[in-house]
Image (cartoon, helix red, strand yellow):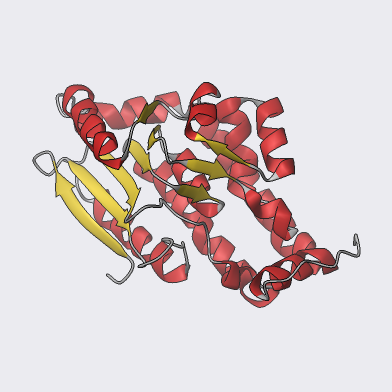
Length: 257
């Protein structure tokens, strides 16, 4: 594997996916396919009780690859990306994101898809897609379900980031720790106490039950938002201009169409 590291802990009952592209742990097509390959392995593993996601280094993830958001590549990128969310639904295994530093865009979407979010005080979470002239399909469905429509809309429309304390107050994050070391120690302690003693089979039923409404909404609305993104949004001038301006490191020139 080139861009993730997979390890097992807690007597091989916990699978740990480490995002590691050497810089900002950008979710490009290669990394996404590697994660999906892990999901295929997990389908056959009846012993798994938890999957964790974490970023190597200071940051969780800067987000999905902007280079792959161009009109020519957007459809392929977004279809692969959305397979991650449908894959997590299908697995039904509990999931945990351990967040440090920047957790933005597609990185935040992967994190908020998890059942549990643990973070340290360096965490910055946001969906800045609107700043580039686009929108985040998974977050547009997931955030309202997790923190309520009013809070979600403000974040999605503004594109601003939250620090760990604000994300905790909204209920998005379960626990906040001082730094990455205490985050890892605290997560391990929580896993030992609350996950390891339980039946892997029963945990999957519990996840499926707790998410019966959430999964129904995601399965029904994410394909619709994917269609709007690829077939309508990416036909506009401003969506393409926003992506181009970011890649060219300049201010966008909007035409409002």
